[in-house]
Length: 181
Image 1 (tube, rainbow, N blue to C red):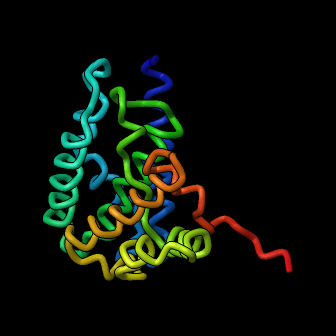
Image 2 (image 1 turned 90 degrees about the vertical axis):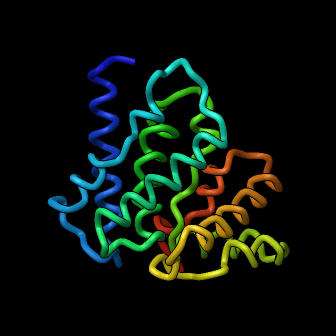
């Protein structure tokens, strides 16, 4: 991948992460969000780009970087820190095609009200999945990584039912739907 394409994708990913913080986040300014993104070790996921990433490698990286964001920015709870990481990775790895082999198969969907609503609608006949995905219903209520892991476990269960990557449960996100009634 060219340096030009890499720069375009990562710049756009930063903007998508900033935009995702516009609704309900504890702060919304680019002066705070962009430095936080620059503090994350995304290089571990993108380079060397020929070395596959394992689910365990990604899980360790994700937890460590989430904890680091929360330490660097005390106003962030785990829910908002993971949303920042996950929106950035959805854009860079899944949409933009950046990253080590296997990265798209392990990244997490950004958790928010739109996803909770869509999962509830799609999996209403799967109470065991919803018991995990809906253990809380607001980003700010994801106060620790254990709660977050429970939600992601439910999303993994949903992806298993669908036969898709974990990130692909994002197909049920209702944030862009317009009510036509």
